[in-house]
Length: 636
Image (cartoon, rainbow, N blue to C red; front, top):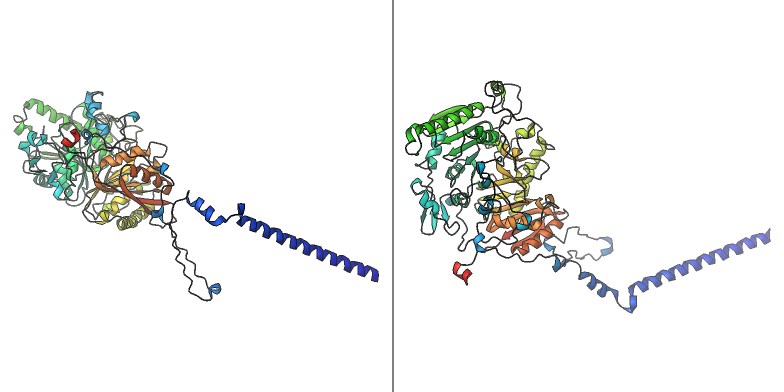
């Protein structure tokens, strides 16, 4: 037994010594490889490898904010978790990521409107004036240059002074001052145009004319907030509505009278180039509280009343249509209009018949004004189809679809109601409560994925975002600096709603590529807007807008069209010294910034209002002032 005990003790000792050898060998090997890692190829790795790495990474200045003043450092450590690298520090990774400089276009293109080019329009059908509608250039025709402002261009007057005065250098066209000299449209004196507020049918001025309308329908109680002016001239009617808290959209074709819409835009009045021809107007159904035509030369009684059918589509239930000029009050004016009494009477009868077939009620005709009202629902109108068989009600048609959509000779049916006293689609509250009240389209669950709670949250979100924007952009914060804003992807109009107390109007765009059509909601809030595909140019003149807001626009159009073409269009419609805010993913904005550099805009990237850890960033940009060279300099 003693022998066995000794053997066991010896065996245990051998095992322990062997384990010690393995442990020692492992330690030696680890130390050896650790040392080798610090001296590859016999040199100091730290400076060589870090300098190599720094050459391919963005330069981000590090400023440690932790300073140890505690002698007992090991027992108390203060750690700073705040971000030391913000969006301002982002730079392109290499010069190859930068886009080449975009040259200036020929000075002759200073008023270039790609989709309303008069030469291109001559290729299209003249029937029903289809050739004056939008006809955009092909992809290989797109210009890759910057549209110049005319030589001598000046920043426009601030509102409300701009309503009455425009610099001649900005719109160098005197044609209307001669053609409309007796109608007080526009006058020229010295270095500017002035707008007395006159019009063909309101020689006493637009203000007095609107007062006359106000004696016939209620314009002051907030029930009428949005209006459309067809064949607007220089948009004096819309200009004077703005001061009454009524928001208009004015439109006219580009080449009827030279520069009429351009004058409207230079005055700071909401306007677009457009025409009633074969396509629907680019607005949803039930959009406007009031439509107006003052000698707008639209043949309302022709083509089976097609154009009044389109006005009916865009009027809200209970909305008004106002007509002045031929043939209204033809008995007093037919000699001055150089038309026969029978001809004018026939035209008046045609309009009256179409209006009755649409179930409109003639409110009044007093002097040179005639006013009709659309019914609040179609209960009676469906019964009347037994008498008025035309136009029939449209079948299986989206009344809100209005981008390159042909006008159909059928009546857009209003939403069903349970009582003859109900307002189809839901009643609208008066302005200004209308802005924040839940829109009927949302209350009725007609907008996919949008609830009343979501609408209210969106409204509050944009109030916070606007406050953040104004902290970043001093010009946006300066009251009156901007007169108009283009929101390229407006969603529910929250950005425009947040600006309601500023002296500015917003053109809200719902892209035709958006998954959900929300433009009807925007109009129900008492705001204005239009449809637009940003793969094409907008129906407006260069230098229309003072400020542009682009929220997730480039993410939406990724793989749909070229980023540079959208940015060139933004450069075309933004005024010199105007600004823009881009909101998008950081990788997208790095590419946007590189193109803006090529357009010679100043820009800087900043963090999202939620902080630096949010991938979405903001790009604040300003278009620099520059113009075409002086004419004599250009010849040299």
